[in-house]
Each structure stands twice: as C-alpha cells, then as structure tokens.
Image (cartoon, helix red, strand yellow):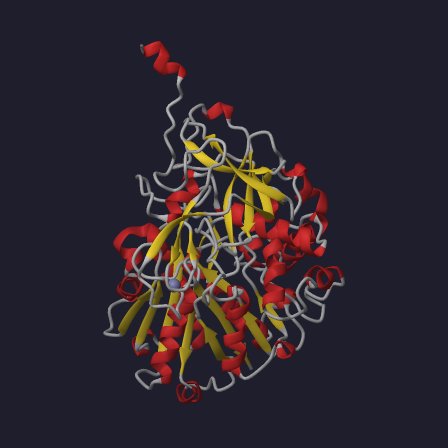
Length: 147
Length: 382
Ligand SMILES: [Zn+2]
C-alpha cells in the first residue's frame, strides 16, 4: 500500500487557492470586482482598490492562461529563504518571466519551466501557464513558451 | 555625512557624526535646533523605529520637537518633507533631518516565518529577489529601445569615475567595460557590477526658514524648491517590488509611478525639466538610471542610452547624472540615501563638489522610490 502511495506524487500547491491543480490546463485564480470589473491577483477581499469604485463584492475567476512575454530574467544565485532549496549544492539557475494578460490588462510574474533559458526568450512571445514542482516538491505555476 | 561602507558599528554613531557635520557646516548650535526629523530603519529594533528621538538623545536632549518617518528608501525624503512642512507652517524655524543605517551582508531578505498573505514573503518563496525586478526593467529596455549590455556597463563606468574623488563614497575605483563583463551574472542581463551593494552610512541636513537663514548669515543657501512624496495612481503600469502582479488596467488606464513623481516636484517648484542642471537618481541598477532619466523627462522615452553615449550625463556634459557616484559608489543605506542625494545637490549648487563639480549648477533634482508606493523627488535650487 505504501509503495502505491509513493508512486502517486502528492500534489501540494506552494500557495493554497492561488491556482487550479488541473495538470493539462491550469489557471491562476484571481478575483474580479463585480462593480468595476477590475481583476486582482492574488485574490482581493474587502474593498476594491480602484479609487473610483466603491465595490465590495468580488467573484473568484480563473485568469487567462496565456499571455505575451513582457520581460524576463533569471536567478543566477540561489535566492534566500523562504525560497527552498533541498540540496543546496544542486542549485540550478532558473528563468523568470513577466507575462502580460490581454483580457485582464495585467502583468503576472512567475518562474519559467525548467530547461528554458533566457536565450530562448524575447519580448512578445506567446506564453502559456503550466504547473511544475519547486525544489521541495510543492507545485507552483510556471510560464512556458506556447507551442 | 558619515562615509559609506561596512563599518560594523551602530547606526546611531553614523547618524550623530553626520548631524554634527551638518551643524558645524551650517553654524547652527545644536541647542537652537527646534525639530529633529529622523528617517527610520527597520533593522535596529526600537532605536531604529524611533530614529528621531534616538538621535536627539545621542546628541543630548535639549527639548526639541521630534518625529520619525518610515518609508523604506524614501524615508529620508519624508523626514525632510516633515521638517519643511513644520517650517513652512511657522511651527519652527530650524530643523535637523537625519538618516542612518547598518545593513546585513548579501541579499536584503524578509523576516522568517510562513506568511502567504505577505507579498514580500510570497515573491521570495517563488525565488523572486530584488535584482529580479531590476533585471526585468533592464531587459525591457533592451527589448524596447535596443539598449545594450555595453550601455549598462557605461553607466557603472561613468558613476565610478564620478565617485573617485568623493570621500564619502564606499567604492573609489575606476572600472572598465571588461571589469563589468567579467563580474558574475546575478539576474540576466545584470551582473554584479550592474547592481548596487548594501552599505552602512548616514546623511544629515539642516533646514530653516528664509528669515532664520538670513539671521545667521546664510541667506544664499540653496533652497528646497519642492518635495514630491506622491504615491502611484491606480492602475500602476509596472510590476513593483514586492508585488507578483501589476494592477489590472481594465477599469482605469495604467500609469507610470516613476514618471508621476518628478511631475509633482516640477509643478511645485514652478520649473520644468529644461531648467535642471544636475540630477541624483536612484541607480539600484545601472539600467535603472536610464529609466529615471526618462521619468525625469530629461529626454524622450527610450533616449537615455543615447544621452549616455553622447557624454551628456557625465560631469562635463550638458546634464550630469549622479555626480556623487550614485549608489554604484555608495551602496544602499536605506534611510540615508534620499538625504545623501540632497547633500550632493547642496554641495553642487554651492560649488563645493571639488573634482566632480558640475559647472554652473543652479537647479538639481533627485529621484528615489520606497517600497509600497512611497514617492521621493526633491528639487533644490540656488
Ligand atoms: Zn471595483
């Protein structure tokens, strides 16, 4: 029984409720002000931040899972905690993307999938959201060049 | 100022040294100071959080009014704004403004503990450090305007040249493009020499009413013509540290925070960018200096690298930027740096900047920005 369990990776998100766990078509989960339509990521509760809006009602919405690459970089040094690196000797630089979502008119940051370096990127590329584990096995959202 | 570096001493010692220098320079007796405005630092426990009173006690309690401002990197400007408001309202005539800091080695990082509701914790959990943001802006310049790595290196070379003779600067060493290119990559396209270090340091300024300045024979002292501490306007167009996403511009158009900052300062001073003779801007990274030059409207968007290549922004050029050497030579000492910028403009406007003196400096502007939307831009003029 334990052997079977070990074969099925536990799918623990790094942040609870920030994205769906749909392996094929994951979405970031944001909120949308029901008064002015402004989107928020991470989700907002309470009071709309649009200074011209008195809205207090929000609906949870999946954000667009594709967008255009606004800018990108990498982390060549291991970041400090709370970034988790289980094997401190095994740190491999990773790429980071800022992706512009057209419908939501916002830019969202995230790591880029393992194996894609900055040399493979340029502004304007179509990017797609996927899920991949961090070094401690917890799942996070990452950006990937759309096929 | 207290020279910047890694001195391993208490921030109070740095601040008091800077304050005594400022008092001696102005000829104001400490007992005559009516208001002490401290810029706070968060890494020194209670004393750092009540910096104004901490400095006042160290200088010797003398019954002054006191205030402490915390606005991250904009703390110095806020402390200066508090002093200026008191003076303009007639509540006091002469004030001392101080910022001082000690910094830990390496990356600035968040406090320990699990805090998924804290955007600062979230971004570090995902591996997004401060240089990530600087690098995203830098890469955007490459992609949008065709800036090159050589351009970025030239900012470092220029600022290092400026700082050579500045005794308050931590790094007084000339660099070549090869030096920058040989330094390790931190966040592509930024290398270690493109990014400013963290430092200990302090800066202090005496400000007074015009009447008081006349009374003590300093009627010709440079004047604070404007201080802008505005927040961004919703929706903010850039992804700002420590956020993981921008505001959505669905309901309201996106606006540039950095461009809004000097706009308010120009309006208040009643001058325009064409009047500026020298600028001290917040070069957390080499590429960021170029962004600021455009945000200050000193050239059209996308043109800052051309100004740099033409030598416009170096001392001797038409519009020198960071004659002090900037953060490239100083490093960050958070509550002190916005004040250090004003100190440099003051020396420039008085013609006391020695080898880095900007000829005919009449109007100077600073630009700086604190976490969570703290604006900071000061205009000083003769
Ligand atoms: Zn709303």
